[in-house]
Amino acid sequence: MRWNLEWLRTFKAIYETGTLSAAAQQLFISQPGVSLHLNSLESYTGNKLFDRSARKMVATEKGKILYNWVFEPLEKMESAEQHFHKRSKEDRVTISVGMCFETFQYTLEEHIASLPFNLIIKFGEYPQMQQDLDNGLLDLIITPQRGNQVNLEYLPFSKERIVLIAGSETDASIVKDLLARNEIKEVAALLKQQLWYSTAADMDHLKNFWKKHFGEHPDFSPNYIVPNISSIIRCLSGNTGYSIVPDFLCTEAIANGQIKLIWEGTVPLENTLYFGTRKKTIYHSEVAQLEKLLMNKWDK
Image (cartoon, rainbow, N blue to C red; front, side):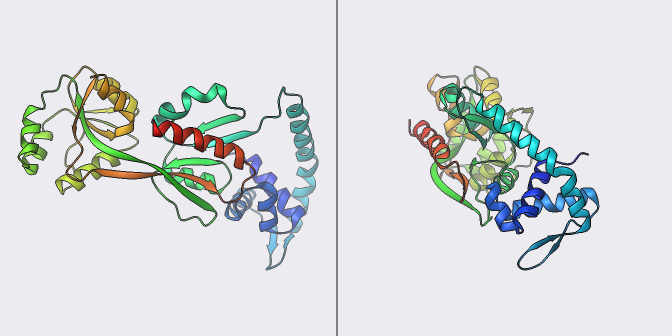
C-alpha cells in the first residue's frame, strides 16, 4: 500500500492554514473529508502529525519533519500542473460524477463530446458515491438514496418506476390472466418457476418489488447474472425470461417490441431520483449545466 497524494496535499493545507475548516475551504472539500485524509496519513506513517486544540492544529516534530520533506516536491508538482494546464488549448476544469452505468448510457454518453469541460464518470455503490462526494472526490452524484452528511444537499428531479418485464417471446398469458383476477399469490408461485435475469451489483429492485407486491422476500435465485441492466434488456430482446428493472431503461425496447411490459404493480413502486452535490463548490456552473442536461433527457 502507498500513501495517497491527496493525503499529502491535505496535510500541507492543514499545516499552512492551521485549522481543519480553513484547509477544507482551501481544498473545496468537506471538513470530514480533511479529517479522513489526515487520519489515513497518520495511520499510514504510524505517527501523530498534529496536536489538536480547539483553535489551532499545531504540528508535532514528526509533522514538521514531514512538511519539510514534502513542501518542495508538492510546490513543484503544483507549479508543473498549472504550467501544463495553461498550455492546453482551453482552460478546462474537470468535473467528477458518480452514477450507475445504465444511467450514464441513457443520459450522458451521447453528450460527452459536446461538454465544455473535462468529465470523469465513476460507477459504484450509492453509499460509496455519497462518501466520495462528501470527501471532495466527486462533484455530482445521481442517486435514489439520500445520505445524512451535513455538507451535502439533495435536489429531487425525477422518478423511476420499477416494473416487471419479459422477453418478447415469453408466453405471459397465464400470468396476465392471474393478474387480471387479482390472484397475486398464484402469480408469485408461477413467476418463481420462470427463467430470471438479474445483475450481481443490484438485487434491490427484485427484492423491493417482490416484497411490496407479493408481501414476501423472493426465495429463489435468478438463473442468469449479467453485468448490468442494459445486458438484461439485450439478453431478453427476442427471447424468453423475466426481470425487474427501472422503467426509463426499457422504454425504447418496449416500444420497439423487443421486450414486454408485464406489470407495474397494483400500486407502482417508485424511487425519487436526486442530484447530490456539496453545499460549497467552485463548480456551480458546470454542475448546473450537467443537471439541466440530465433533466432535459428525463423529460423526453
